[in-house]
View 1 (cartoon, rainbow, N blue to C red):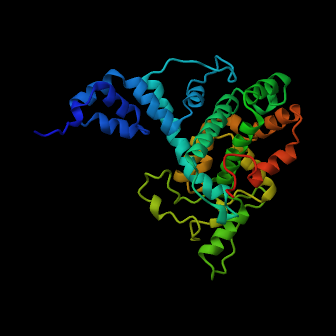
View 2: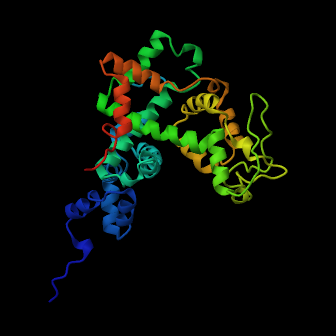
View 3: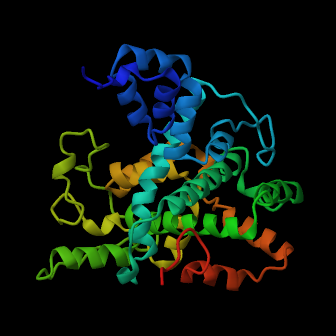
Length: 343
């Protein structure tokens, strides 16, 4: 007589434990389709099972919920306790996927120069990184919008409201936000909106034997954008678009966003974009004209209105008696932030 027990013959509590032990949403859904009995158990306990998987894969769930439930009717620094629902978890998964994409970008940017230290993040570091992304994204959603124009950025009430959100977190947690913010800045600076020097270096790297002189933007005499620039990645000509190849109808120098001084203000403006928007531009907008068109659709408030996270961070740290220069140096050196060097 065989003593083999079929998987579906296990006790319901044990099958539910198997579902609760899954660390990704895909694993839960795959296990739930193995047989009708497990499917029935999954349906009867869907929310706790899914919330556990979402917490493991895209957590911290609490910080993600603060982001997706934010609205102008409540101050952003107030912690919101909301009941779980399938729709809420779907929204968390959407922002979690964006955070997970940034997890993969982080090592190449964090250890860009000292690449010998480059490594994958541990599970704990990934969770810390996602938490920082959600919190920085919440700041963007709350304060980088049309209701916060440039003229009001230094008014005491607005400064106090922005600082109230950062006061929710310790200085160590703020260092994690700075670490993520530096990665976003690097992507904007070198990938989304490269300056003239970056365009020059990349052109020379691709055409080392060329004597062609790039025609960069000088003062207000901007070269016309290339008419061959495809609008999106779905355009059939997207893969044929050569950003650094000069032709009669395309000047690679027109892809530059100015010299060091003007480029600084461009980056400050662009850092108002949230992590999802920056990621989309990085992957879907290879030309300057595409980025400009995307930003134009956001609204007139976006122009000449730099991000305020850095300014608010300094205000909060100074109020705590923290030396801002030493704090930023510690993040850059890896002594503070999401991930440091492993001895």
